[in-house]
Image 1 (cartoon, one colour):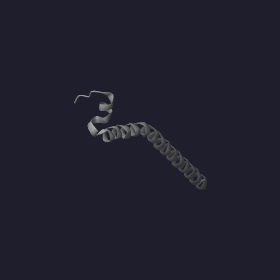
Image 2 (cartoon, helix red, strand yellow; image 1 turned 90 degrees about the horizontal axis):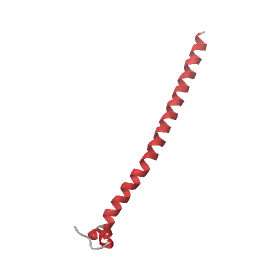
Image 3 (cartoon, helix red, strand yellow; image 1 turned 90 degrees about the vertical axis):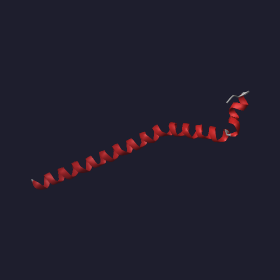
Image 4 (cartoon, helix red, strand yellow; image 1 turned 180 degrees about the horizontal axis):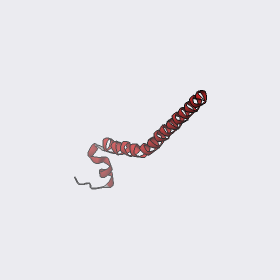
Length: 67
């Protein structure tokens, strides 16, 4: 396909909304994904720390009652 001008290129043969919309959604997903991964990772780490703290507290309480 050949374009005679920049406006022809950006019009994409009448499919500009679909083409540029697809590019926009893909770009947004690629930009947002690292932030969501970082957020989810920090939530997992906090949950594991909380669980480890609870396990340590339970173990120390059971050791004190055994003595």
